Length: 455
Image (cartoon, rainbow, N blue to C red; front, side, top):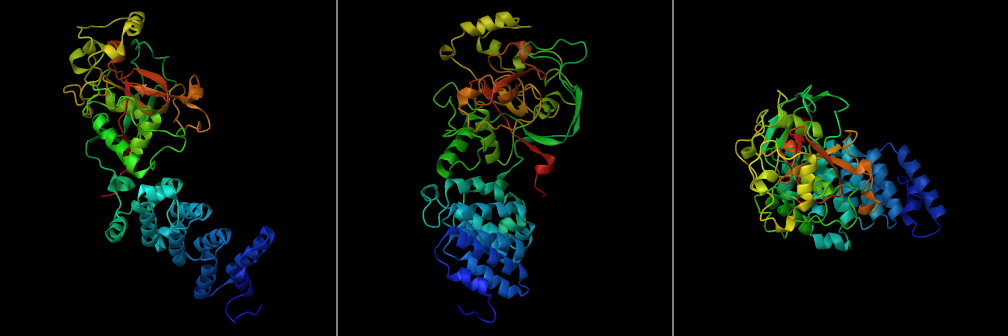
């Protein structure tokens, strides 16, 4: 083989290699990559990188992409754009990862890389699922999160989206976050649980290990997520695919709520029949997250650490509990044993109503957050028994195997339509397995101050 004065022989060797033993291919790749490291002429480097980026062999394209990201920031964005449309998964995956972790792509080639990513992910679900030609697979679509660092630059995102040739639903962009319908909760101290000398609600396993903590500032939904709002998310998942799901989500998850066919769960009622995974996916769809248990409690209790969002005394007209559903007048309500007997005798299918509308007046917390007690328990992001963040790693397990697994229990707060007064407080808590779908559990979303884009 002859060489030209400009192009090194190692590059020419890789250019003409078409097929052969893997060991031969790897030797050629090593020589090619070592040569790229030594090239000082930027134009020659780009020409030699292009040889690998456009090669017929996926492994050579993948290695050339990694070299381009490392050695040539000006070419890297264009190289990532090519790789995002690559028919081979092993080439697309590192291209997607490069977007999130490589500062050079954001500074030197952000518009080009972002444009390529959005154009690919903006194709129809049928084309994505088919995974043919230059269309990506559903697995690639999960990597939409890799674009968050680019989309956080609102000027960059606006410039790219103006020019985008492929229609893209705004609901699929991480930047769809809106603080409308949320309340700001300033940073402050939280004295967890009951006051000194005060009896705790039955069902609480005991005093918190750390009685006082600092909670950073955040935003919290004023009201729980409603059936109407959640069903819009489910419809978008049906149209766009599972782009927002937790990576540990059980296989073949259908986000449809288990109460979808129950006429008692009206559009303006808080959503129920959703698992923790469902709630996490909805929150991500909104650009939000679930609140921690401490955030939930601070929002409910305020700076004076009150027992109920509205004050110290129980007021049955301000909260929807078992007394509301059964049409009973109540003061302190039944003790634990009597309540459990009543629940055991209760036929939920025969009840004329379960949840009620959100935004019940008069019961808001000091920060203006409503419906924090009663109607539905609310999922948090906190593990129940040890108070640590829930970071599930149960993807290989069947949901049935999680029952009785302490690390799969999530703290829920606030009480529900089935709760007696003792549990309709801002301090009561319970633990539920994260795959539970119950007509008594819903959720609301939160956003940290640091997560809010600069305006």
